[in-house]
Image 1 (cartoon, rainbow, N blue to C red):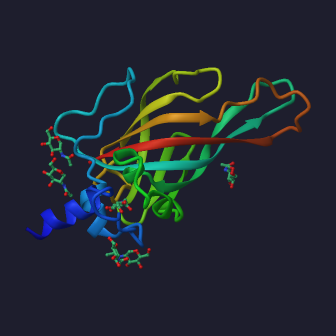
Image 2: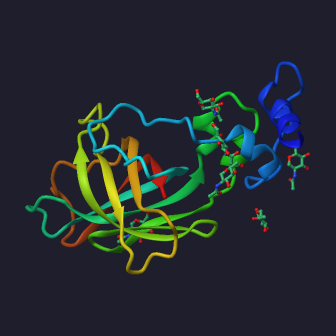
Length: 200
Ligand SMILES: *[C@@H]1O[C@H](CO)[C@@H](O)[C@H](O)[C@H]1NC(C)=O
Ligand SMILES: *[C@@H]1O[C@H](CO)[C@@H](O)[C@H](O)[C@H]1NC(C)=O
Ligand SMILES: *[C@@H]1O[C@H](CO)[C@@H](O)[C@H](O)[C@H]1NC(C)=O
Ligand SMILES: *[C@@H]1O[C@H](CO)[C@@H](O)[C@H](O)[C@H]1NC(C)=O
Ligand SMILES: *[C@@H]1O[C@H](CO)[C@@H](O)[C@H](O)[C@H]1NC(C)=O
Ligand SMILES: *[C@@H]1O[C@H](CO)[C@@H](O)[C@H](O)[C@H]1NC(C)=O
């Protein structure tokens, strides 16, 4: 009964003024507005999550893909990425909700590389997840945006329940085409955004 009335208040903004969630972890609004049980990924060719997995968070990441130039003649090589993570579960589940900008205002965690092949996601409310890339496909606009990925969580070093993370809806992030004019060992950072869909 309580759940029903809260749901009605949050889900019918036209009938009842939509209450603003004053915190990103306000479960009063979160349970009704940000329920991810019916949310599906944008169309892609990656192996889909198996039926036993549950979508627990869609994180929006904003930061840089990092590359290095060994010499001005070499091709740039990837040395990882660094991004701030925001809670995008609600804005994907319910794009029109007024609370989305409030939820977006505060980072919920960080993405970085534990080593060259270990993308890590440290989200205090979920725990940290060390992962390995297991699959990649071109983004829909491959010349503009970095690949979409499927990452598998490593049990060694992870404290969260997350099992797989999909990097989808990428924007930017490509390496420069060459290292011309760069100093030896120079690090090149390229802005990017992505959604990280996390399944436990
Ligand atoms: C959660 O959001 C409701 C509006 O739905 C608000 O009344 C309440 O004060 C908020 N609680 C917290 C702890 O921010
Ligand atoms: C909600 O988030 C605030 C900071 O945004 C934190 O201080 C508080 O402990 C959190 N509450 C719960 C129940 O996680
Ligand atoms: C994301 O936001 C929703 C709605 O406020 C909340 O229910 C959920 O716990 C948040 N997740 C994390 C990891 O902060
Ligand atoms: C989300 O909705 C499903 C039904 O679609 C329900 O079974 C589940 O309990 C809901 N989750 C939350 C956190 O309210
Ligand atoms: C999810 O879809 C089922 C079946 O269409 C529906 O009964 C349920 O209410 C939906 N849940 C949410 C949270 O939208
Ligand atoms: C990647 O670039 C960021 C700046 O966005 C920097 O803080 C970070 O230390 C760099 N990491 C590596 C491994 O170069």
